[in-house]
Image 1 (spheres, rainbow, N blue to C red):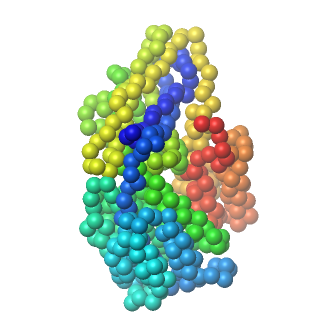
Image 2: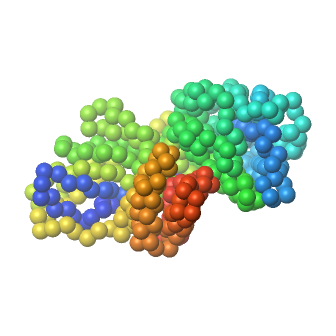
Image 3: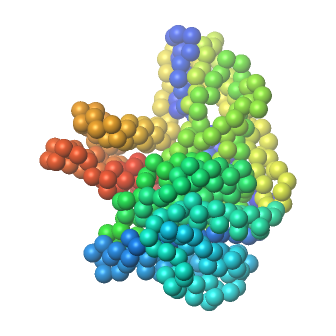
Length: 428
């Protein structure tokens, strides 16, 4: 049985009444991996790029240096990988070195030995040249590119780097070569705007590691490596073909995390959203922002939806075209779908948080106060599943009122929380 992707879709309302020329609406699309006969797990080629600069020896009140915590986390996480997966290790500070060329995980002891001795190599700790580390990692990982294998670069830093322009160029190069990047920022001194840009450029992801929580690095490394090990679908794309006068304004992923997806229009009334990779055992969800024209009462196909993907053989598979439908009725709007509404609430908090970050960056205290209060109120309405978002908005207000500024730690924690959906289990 060939592994496939099952599609479920639902509209924000079961019917819509449009008084003017057009109205906004939303659709939720769920992609659920199906077919237990399943693709063979993808082979993984990972480059681990670690900051070994002087600040990585700080203990942050935990009694264990940042570097030692990262070494332990990486050593533990490689147990999630398969014997034929490969790992290469690059260390950077003032300069960068390939400490271990790509090596199969069947040589786990050799890999663990290099990780354990990472501070003993000839890397000058007096700087942070992340660009040099990224370049060496891409050079290594590109040598192994082959059908059926997933290439991934994992970069960890705790400081602001030199060579920001080259970092962005390297992230773009990774995207063009279909190499995904994961960026991890440790502590508070790394440049969040750069790390987030690199993740976006490479269609990857970023993490914030709170150094005051001794087990946080281990949790995040385990999460990332488990995700990579479960990858079964490569280069997944959502093709949307709206009918005449229907507009698809944007496509956002809402599970497992919230982010706007890059789209292209190869031809008129054909939008393609790049979804990246999907795991064999985890569903993903997406919200489509729509503009619907006025119609006579009745049920209409508003768009055709198709998902294409690669199971590792280098050929494209497809779900086939599936209609997205909307019922029009002049009698008034139909009922709201609670599941779709929940995701829209989460997207709205995410967007409010983006506005909050901009207000903090421009030192607009009145705007910070206003937006934080909006997040707090929205979180209270959402209830327990937004408890952390609500708590962090209150923390912003407390810090603003007591000291006139918001700490970077609170900013990072707020943003990290805002992009994560569903803080408590909910019905499928």
